[in-house]
Length: 182
Image (cartoon, rainbow, N blue to C red; front, side):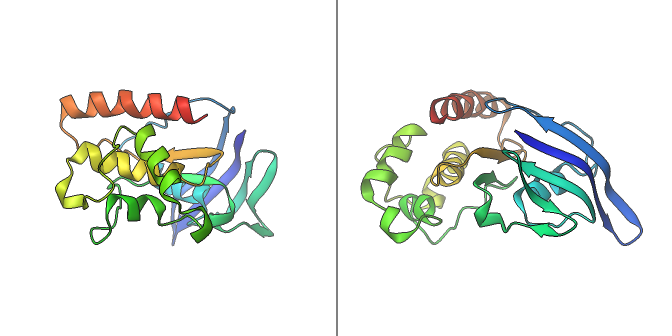
C-alpha cells in the first residue's frame, strides 16, 4: 500500500501540496487528475523521493519513507518512475537505457531481453532513441522502470507527447505490461 498523510510541499510562500492524503491499495491502478500546475508531478516526484515533504509522511508497504525525521533515498524505495518526457538517454542504445539502473551483475543480456519481450520491443536492443517512434521510446522508459522489479510504478503523464491514436495503443500496451509484471 502507498499512503500519504498530510503531505505538504511549498516553494517559498506557495503551497503546491497542502495536507494531501492518499491511500493506494496494492495491485491497483490509480490516476491522479488535476489541472496544469495543480501539483500532480510534484506529488509523484515526492513519492519517488526526489523532493522532501515539508510536512506529513509517505509510507510504502507499511514503512515510512518520508517524514519529519525520515528520508529514504529514491534508489532505496523500490519504485519505478517514468517521467513526462520519458527521459531516456540519447547516447545509449535501448539495451543501455534499460540496463542503466541495474547493478552490473544483474545487467545481463537475458534480463534485458526479458524486459524487451515484456514491452514488445524484442530485437531492438541495439537501436538508439532517435531510431524509435515516440511509443517505442515510452516503452523503453517503462522497461527501465521495471528493470529492478519495483513494488510500485509511478507514471507521470507518459502519453502526453503522443498523438491520440498512438496514445490509446500505448496506454493499452502499458496496462498489459504492468499487469503481467505483477
